[in-house]
Image (tube, rainbow, N blue to C red; front, side, top):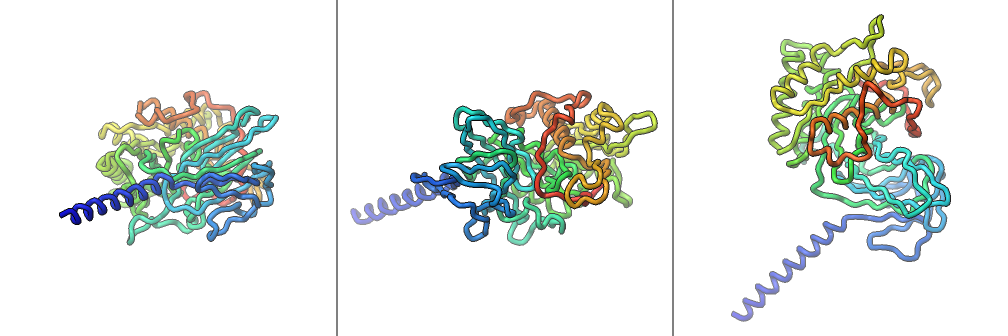
Length: 438
């Protein structure tokens, strides 16, 4: 009997010990990448004292040939040119903490992630203290299960959003001591379902509100943008993107749904704003609610179109009204981007509104031999203004998510911000090909 008791006790001790080891490993899934010469290191710290290029075997390093744009001195990475730093990571949410080294004079830093997701734009690091900035990034993977994946478009397959690593882009001046990367579990997700006005546009000068809005949320939530150019509600479903969202969604998560531009082009007996479009919106709402989440319907951004009297024309037919109708019918919060962007264009005027979209003379960007004149897709100024509209809609709807909004003082589309004061250091990745959809 005594031997049996000791065996039971030993088994319990071993089980408890294994659980303790597992818990500690789970909690300490983090790495610190420190720069320059350093004698003392923390646990899981990797000291980088050479401008090493990224490769998949080491799993970290400077990317896209930008190692030549930095140099390392003492305990600091120093650069006044754009550079990329990548980490090999699996799918999930990661808390990123960038620790700066203060200088005698203040300096300005910008940080983006993956396909130009905005996290820190023109952040001023002052001459006192050792400031840190923390944000949460989602590393995406097209895999849904062992037998199913998202049907990516060919144009997506080489995007930073869909590779097997996390890439950070740094702009401006940077004096960085370390970058901490920490896996976070159980965090609230903000899923985005939409088209080219929502997707993370990888190439300058194109942009969307979906890639601008992450900078305005604290580190208790993460934006998971599953939008893609050229999609309608129907093609979003058939590409298994909504299935991916439902597979990953947890109670308390949010889903923002903005479609209409491409749904408008669908043909068939049941096609139309109050038919297939409305039915699919109801499906999105119903299925996401089953997961314990909160769906939000977003009406489509207006196209830039004016009549001879200088008034904005509605080019989306009944689709904005159908979205409002479904939202009212199902008691779903609605963010009326169609109304707000109409007011926005009207306030800017016929010529001024071009400053919010991709209207550029030939040669403005590298490899752009022809002029660009796009009245659907936004530049970074326009995309940022629309992100502010979405934030205003979140607060107006009194969603619990509003408590996670930071650095936002409200927005009125009738009185937009001056485009002349917008400052966005352009990324190195540019393109003159218009995104899918219109």
